[in-house]
Image 1 (spheres, rainbow, N blue to C red):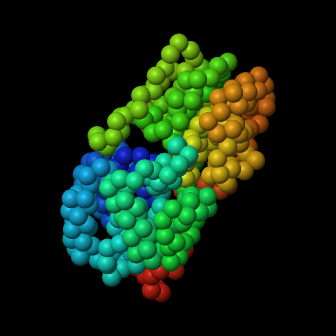
Image 2 (image 1 turned 45 degrees about the vertical axis):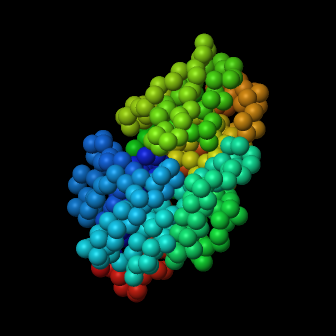
Image 3 (image 1 turned 60 degrees about the vertical axis):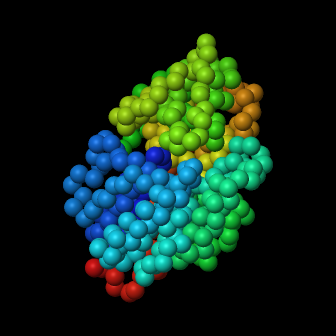
Length: 368
């Protein structure tokens, strides 16, 4: 089996692709990977070392949610056609909507990681204002969904919102994301602090909520505060006098250490189709304190503690409750770890995708 997969290097999709492509290659699947957005750093691409069945083609074309992206999308489509003609894959796995509308001979999966309309509704509690940009974006997403042979979402809740805001795809499936447990350390001695990780500029992550609460423990916040779309004004995180410490961008090694020592992980998101950072924290045996939104309820069920979405008093109350009882917090961490290992590993994710690939390709291709 030979899969051509697209990626972007600007957020969680890159982590998702890393996990999935690595697992597919270990199973003998040949992967041609084409990335958009920005050329990855050496640290970002280090995971590819030793994966002989992986052929990486990095590009710097803009992404479909960026302002003034039409010329880049057209150019990237031409480049993608050239690569497809060159390598003749058996199946196309697109992690952007735009390419689902292109006419290829091979079956195409579009994975709906997130979308601007659902993000806006979650953050602003209303539809995005009409503009040429949002109309163009709606067209791009709708055409990609309609053109795909199969649309995959990382949660049932995100799929429902996608279908409500755009078009109903011909065929859909939910595959929950996964991470490799071996990358995280659940055995480290836990310390009296909480952690939170995510794009600080992204209002959907709602990191600013942490600066509005009283906290008995330090809260360490890791993440980028620079919006990659320069046409969009960045959102600053203003940290005043208090116990919230903004750590900025951290390396993978630093993040693993942050998770390993944290007793609690605080997931503040208003919009989160899945949430890889809480999963990483759970695999590090952190107790999960999560915003009560549909996707977190779906993913974590009764294995996390919840606070009312965007409600600082509710967050404060639950945080103080956890910090006051170390044994209680440890039990929540154990529950999160067990749940994550059982349901959200990269191996399980890859097996789910392999089954979907088999359903879309001729009999016998998977053995090639």
